[in-house]
Length: 340
Image 1 (cartoon, rainbow, N blue to C red):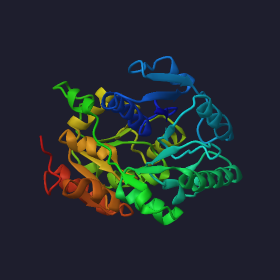
Image 2 (cartoon, rainbow, N blue to C red; image 1 turned 180 degrees about the vertical axis):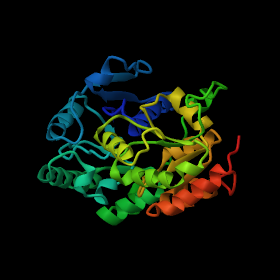
Image 3 (cartoon, rainbow, N blue to C red; image 1 turned 120 degrees about the vertical axis):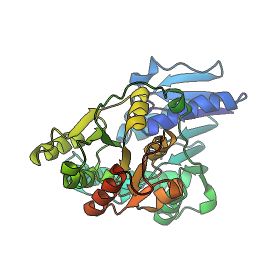
């Protein structure tokens, strides 16, 4: 078979790690089929095909655009693929070939607010409608669907009426490089700190974390709050919030972190906090646990599914509950006591 992988998000966080590890593992496990990897200009030059059965094709088209729906089917058809894997929720609805989709989450269906976009509201609503149509058609055309959790599978069933037997749940796992990068290097942050890793979109609920931290900042023994994520519109807005409440010396914006930085940050944090209102999986929490960092997460179904009894849970809409749990962990009490 000749199988395509849409890897245009290869260098992104989150789904980018999923794609990078997918390619790395499939290249070892499958010694028979041929593969074609579709890449943006940003990734094309630096990407090395694993072996002679693999080929890379330039596909410099941005995701979630009209151009994507027109150009990508042509590129797939030109390669004569037997199957294309779309590892993100942007299926090519005009593609006539066989495809499988990976659905990581359906967050946009639950957070339709202007606060969640930098676009003018009419454009945002039009784009959101396009996203819904794209998924509605694509999920029905797909020969198979991969969901990263049972919670995500159920959302696909509930929102789009897709038969459950068409959806395979394949859990994500911690990158093996994470453990290999664990060394006894000095901490990047010298003070005690609470850690958050991820973007600052509204559903990530980072503002609640900041509010909870504000309640305890005077009683934490100089414990800082470290936020790790790219310097985009949403993080810049958070910086303004932090400045307005006088916490600019207590909340540290680390910026993007490479794998070595992440391992260091997880390894030395007092606690990792994941305050999301909704997630499809929650890989950063699993990464933190694998490095011995206590984890404090929202009391939402997917975290119970993935983390079970290995985390402490709090009400994501109650900053006081979060601040109480943080205080307990930082003082060495409860099941969140730091383990090394």
